[in-house]
Length: 278
Image 1 (cartoon, rainbow, N blue to C red):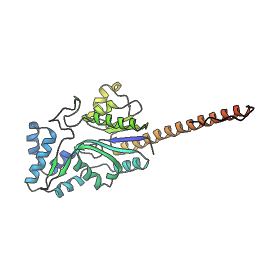
Image 2 (cartoon, rainbow, N blue to C red; image 1 turned 180 degrees about the vertical axis):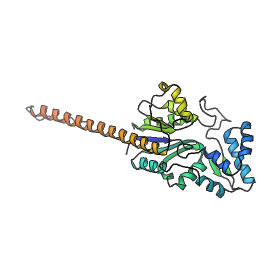
Image 3 (cartoon, helix red, strand yellow; image 1 turned 90 degrees about the vertical axis):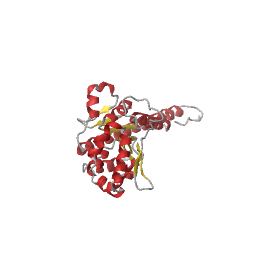
Image 4 (cartoon, rainbow, N blue to C red; image 1 turned 45 degrees about the vertical axis):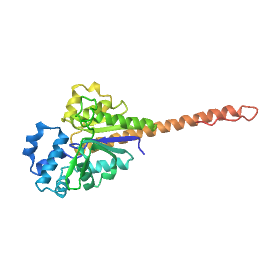
């Protein structure tokens, strides 16, 4: 298995739109959304909009059909499947919500490609209404990051992933793909061994370009799904080749040690117990 964790944003990275805005616009609730937007946090607003749509007779089935129509570049699904087949550990870190994300992934047959989805909870209650809540309950405590929205610090999620990889003793590299302002904080948490793929001419790209020296990871910009697929698979290939070369070098080094030990042992008058190479 490749020693690579690929972390995807969802909106405007896997799909080509913001899933919240897509649902609101497609169900004809844009005016109310814009009217309420200045009055409450985004997650609270989306929960309120789902309540309003339910009151108007919009069903979960109707929302699902809208989500299935969300635009996605034709090379995104093959890219995700190829990365999975190459042994990468794929995860999602998104400020969308679980119901929207899983519905779209299921529709395209790629839900099982991901080992983890970090996002705002979204579920259907007993009345058939979609409920959306924040990933981080900012009404109880702040997450302490002034770069991120109050409901989610993606940087903290990346730090948790890094800590779990370190605890496992694995030397896996992270490839992070994103487009938005919220993807800047996790970009700053990546190490020199990692790679970041910001979408060109989107907010995270602009933030990185202001001072690229703040980013330790290698930067690989992309514009659309075709370029995403090409760059991602090239990165996976080069990282895997580097790992293979390192493993071969370790094997050669081990063989040399064995040869040195055998040669010195041949000159001993009496048989000696040889240390077992570790």
